[in-house]
Image (cartoon, rainbow, N blue to C red; front, top):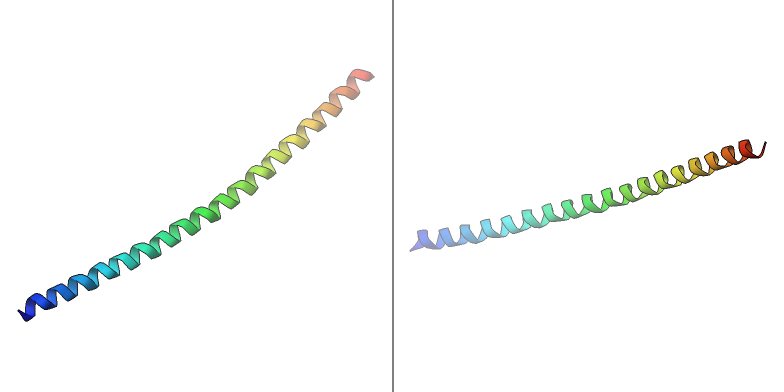
Length: 68
């Protein structure tokens, strides 16, 4: 009977440790996802701004050559 009780306690401990490890892994996963999402958003904004500035520069060059 004592061996069965030990196995139950060990099973309970293993289940608890597994849940803790999975919870910590989930926190890391969510943290990395948020971090990369913020970085991707900033990169997208910079790329969009650079594209707009290059397009406006081309428009100025074309309009000045057409006027002359």
